[in-house]
Figure 1: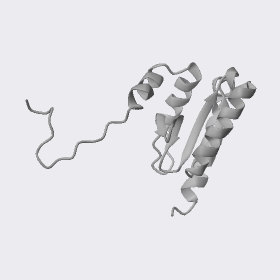
Figure 2 (figure 1 turned 135 degrees about the vertical axis):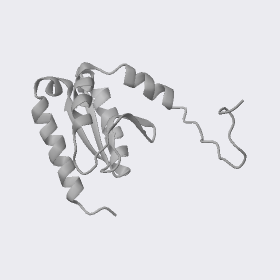
Figure 3 (figure 1 turned 45 degrees about the vertical axis):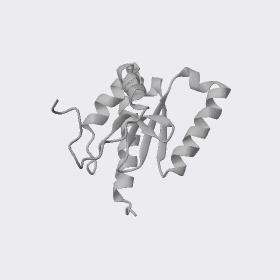
Figure 4 (figure 1 turned 180 degrees about the vertical axis):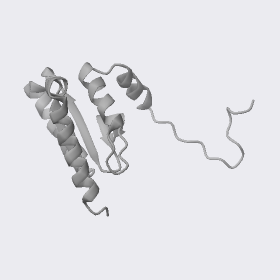
Length: 134
């Protein structure tokens, strides 16, 4: 029965009920998310490492770099509706309360102005890398 039960003295890792939903979201990425992910994976600023659909509190951040406390959110047309604007503001406030900086981009900007979006992300990461860490 090797491999399925923890060895004596090993602690079992607590399972996170959000993991299946995060996996589902990663499999169902939008075109804009796919494009940005391709670019983020190759971005190298001070050992950055981005995660897709990272769980932070009750939320799934589209992309997060925990080392530099940066969250990147991509918004489609539905985010222009008043109810979604209110929800997005609450989400941003929570993430900021956890010490994260939140960058939001429209899907169209990622698809049409990828280089400009990447420049903003790169400059933000350079600034974070240069700041002293507590």
